[in-house]
Length: 452
Image 1 (spheres, rainbow, N blue to C red):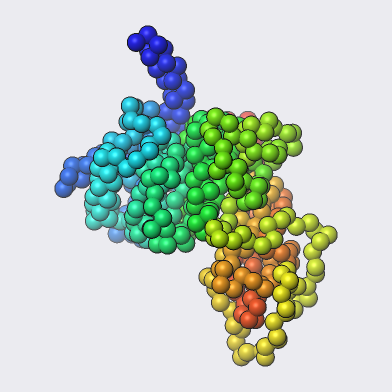
Image 2: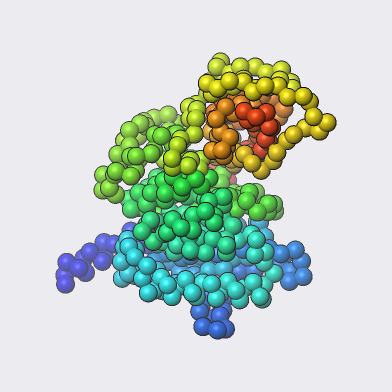
């Protein structure tokens, strides 16, 4: 009994690190409610400027961590400032599975998890009936232990959510089923965690990214330097804004204080997380922050801030960084230089209108928003059916920057940019995709220290 008491006393301060809600309070309304049919408890936040008769608001569904260290109410407080910034309605169900004393890791679909599943669906139905929200713009997110529920809900009910962005969250593939993957493999995934997070959370975040990437999802994975098991809703909020088209009404201040570890390729990460245990995660190489190139101990682990969705049966070609002196220049209107060992397509007669197909290829960029200088990697995601023999042309501000499937860039000047990709396949068909980039001005940490 004495030993158990001392173990509990040792664990409580560690878990309590993330309990405090350090984000500013919002100016909207917080409601403490119970769903009518089964009496499920939940909290709801209506952002400043919410109008029942106005345009529908995007909905954030957030799952709290282990009680009493995190609760539905704490999740609402954490998200208030971001909700006001982007106009999000925030829903936080009160969970039974995320309670102190439940198993860690969560290894099976327990009765508590199934009860929370039904309660969440009932609560969402009620919110859709009573609140001015957009059913087509729903983020599922979480913190800590709530990650088990977030991944499970997205996997079992992909029609209910438009994207996932979890923070310092847990994950277990044993809770998920592959049969539902085709229903949502096209939906964006973001996994955020921190350098000094709990070992299990770091390891399971990497496991989550690998699980999604191997099944063809477009995955954003980022680890933030110098942070612990603390609340960081800013990156998830900005990620959702990119997905649903929400405009920020005020600067995303939290992003200005977050630095992302430099990326590795998918191949650098692949295989090493799969064979490592939480107690001994060793991935070769050295970490670098945007401010320092000092090497870090290899036991700290590495992540790729972006893992482009890669079908499990093959790897995307050209997964190497490009140097500026290796680029081949193009003249406007020319067919891009081919990057594959494949015969060039026969030139086709110029059609009356350009044969341009959109939304067939896509772009992944990490990070797409950051404090200056933005150092990003980019990659084209091309369907397997016509990937062989494709030619690529990347432009930024109408200037060609690459003819490879992937590359890197640095933007030093704050502002908004548009990265454009043109892909010509072996049949001569032209496909386009664009991706906005945002470079933020660095804030004076001495002046903004109270908002960290």
